[in-house]
Length: 195
Image (cartoon, rainbow, N blue to C red; front, side):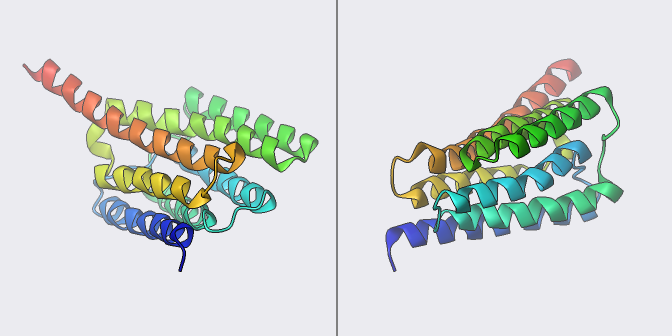
């Protein structure tokens, strides 16, 4: 068993494990996923997976595949237990995602599709960060920590300095840790207001 396979496997396992506390907290009505974010991530997760596959990714696909399955599952839960979806910022993000999908279809180039995916995915992350800053108790911190850490192992699983294969796991690190920062900044803001 080589190191790249182990890194890819760890990334996939961390991704799987990260959804367990999130789903638990959704069912306990403690976590409230942002619907538009999870819809964007569900649609675009498949694009990331197949783009990386087309560009030759192997062991690093564990993280992407598991995360795609996980976001689709969370989106399903968000329909009943989530928040948002019809606010102006949600609709603008969904419109931008649709435009991005159209651009991807027109270019029909996996590398461009992946970059477009990341830009659109960042819209979903921004929606979740805003919601999390406003209501930091509405997210499960351990999920975002585990998922960001999965990104680290996903990047290590690439095994080379191929920017197209590295860009997605690096983005996963940044996006997940941005939600963690939003939780802490939101908590700090609430504490400041209560003093």
